[in-house]
Image 1: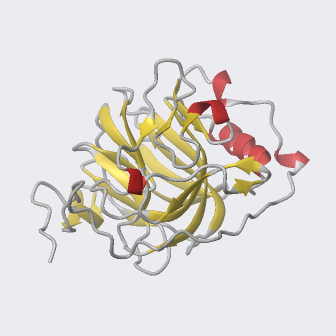
Image 2: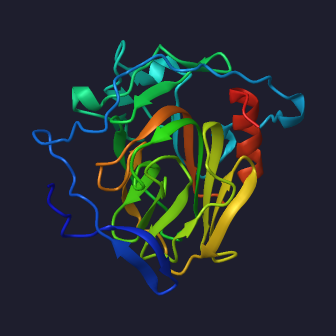
Length: 281
C-alpha cells in the first residue's frame, strides 16, 4: 500500500468556507513512481474535423497584452526531443519551459495530429511541469485545446495549479472523464455538467476576482459550472499538464495548445482561435 500524502490532499467537493478534502496517495519519486495502471503506448485515433469559417478569428494569443504563458504543439521550434519531449518552450519571452526530467514520463511528439497539426501524445503516465507566476489580483484564465482518451483515477487531471490556494481539473471518475473543478482554499469544488468528456475539446477555466467574483469552467464553449471565487489563487504556482497536483494520477490523451492570461474578458476570442486552428467545435 502506498503512503498517504500528509501535507495536503485532493478534494472531491467542498463549501464556500473551504472544500472537504479526500486523501490520495503521496507523489511518486523517481525511484518509486508507480507503473500500475500505465497502459502501453498504442496506436491512437487521429481525429480531424473541418475548420468552420464561422469560428474563425483574427485574434491570436500574441495579441493579448496580458498573456502569461503560451505553449503550442504545432510549433516544432518550441519542442525539445526528436521523439519523447523533455521540454516544451513558452512562446512568451522569458517564460519557463514545460519540462519532464524522467524519460519514462515524457510525452511523445511527431506521432499524432489534430486537424493536420502536431500534438503531444500522453499515455496515461506522462506529464509536463513548470513554475508560473499569476497576477496578484487573482484574475487569470487558462485556455487549452486537448484530446481526452481516458482516465484511470478520479484524481487524474488534465490541468493543475499547485500551491496552497490552488485547483485542478480532474476526472471525478476512475473509468471516464466526467470532469470536476477540484479547488483548495479558493472556493467550492464542483462536478462539471455535460460529461463524460472524450475526444478533442476546448477547455477554459476563468477566475474573475475583481469583476464577477466567480470561477467558471467552459468546455466546448458551454459553461459547465461556476462557483464563488472567495480567495485569490496564489501568485507563485507549479503548473502541471495532464497530471494532478500530486503528480500521481495522469490522463491518457494529447495536448494541442495551452495559453494562460491575466485577462478574463476575452474567453470567446480564445475559443474561436483554438476552434478554428485545431478543428474543434
